[in-house]
Each structure stands twice: as C-alpha cells, then as structure tokens.
Amino acid sequence: MRARCMMAAAVLAAVISPGLGATGLDWGGDIRVRFTMLDEISTQVPGLSLDQGFNRDRIRLWLDYKPTDDITLMARIINEFRFYDNGRRQAPDAWDPMTEVLPDQLYMDFRNLAGGKLAVKAGRQTVKYGTGKIFADGTQNDGSRTDFVDGVKLSLTLGKHNIDLLGLYSAAQPGMVINDQDRYLSTFNSQIYGLYGSSKQFEQVPFEYYWVY
Image 1 (tube, helix red, strand yellow):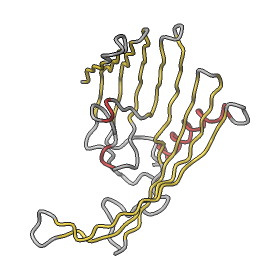
Image 2 (cartoon, rainbow, N blue to C red; image 1 turned 60 degrees about the horizontal axis):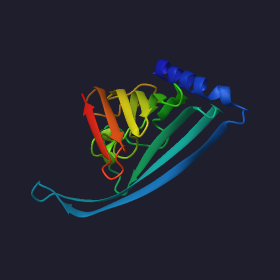
Image 3 (tube, one colour; image 1 turned 60 degrees about the vertical axis):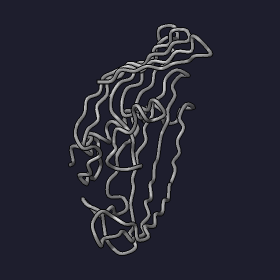
Image 4 (cartoon, helix red, strand yellow; image 1 turned 120 degrees about the vertical axis):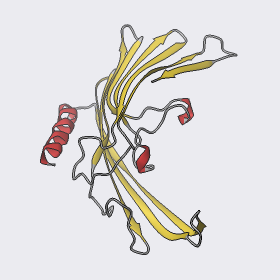
C-alpha cells in the first residue's frame, strides 16, 4: 500500500512540479451530487423489489500545465462517496468519504509534430469513438465515477483524413490508487490495439472505419 501511494505521489509530482509558478499552469475542480430514488422497482426475484434512496458525491481536482502551445501535461484526481437512506452499503466497502483517491487523468499530450501531421497522447486518458458505441469507458464496473484507460494514442492527419493508432491497457484494479479499497474498475485485465480512421475527402459522404483487437 505504501509503495503504491509513494508511486502515485511521485508521478503526480513529476507532472505538476515543472508548472508551479509558471504562466502555463491552470487548475480547478468540480463536485457532482447525484441522488437516486428506487421506488418499489420490481426484480426477477419473486416478492423482491428495490426500495431505496441514495446519493453519490464525486469530487475531482485537476492541474493542467502547458509549457508551450503544443504540449499539455494533465493530472486529475478523483474521490467518490455515497450515502444510503436505510444504512445499507454496497460491497466491497462502505464508500465512506475520502476512502479511495485515484488519478483518472494523468497524461502528456504532444501536438503539431512532424510538420503538424502527428500528435501523441500518452498516459491515463479517456478514449471514446463512435459516439461511445464503438469504444468507450475502460472502467465499466464503477458506473460513472471514472472512464479511463492507460496507454498511447498516435494521431495522424493526412489532409482531410485522420487516423488514430491505439495501444491501450485496461486493468481490473489499476495502479497509483491512494488508500486502495480493492474496487474492481473492470471485470478483467485487457490489452487493446487498433486504429480508428475518419475521412472528409468527399464532403457529401464522410465516413469512418476502425479495427480493434
């Protein structure tokens, strides 16, 4: 546990510290309060219905450093806690305030490489294609708390043609978690390789294509 916390702190410091006091540094955060009421929702179990109210509170803090117009270093940490109206809790833990904190965005983004034809984004990031129907949410087991994957995305721009080359990893229990509560963010570990292309060469007939393994 201590090793994970130290690693997370070291990575965050490496991303953030160059920007302290610099004009390219920006920071902020957001809080989401979501209340859900289940009013006698029927289930497939005879005689069992869901009757409960609960709320989910998500806090996110982020730092964004741009040493140049073409480089972005981004770090964001997240915590979510929940309250239930009848005292019941969800497994595997109680979701008490400030129990588990993890970085859900931690990446480096380099743009306008190779004469403006190449961009590289490496680290923990959100990747979504096809309005979320083709590829989305690498942490599907934790609802709307997070939606990241770890990896590298190479983006090529060839005129009106764009191609993204992907090398990604989705871990059931990702690293760099502070005060880890053993929450599974995915059912199993996954390695993802592929490409996603889009073309506007013919304005009346734009198209997209993909291959994902």
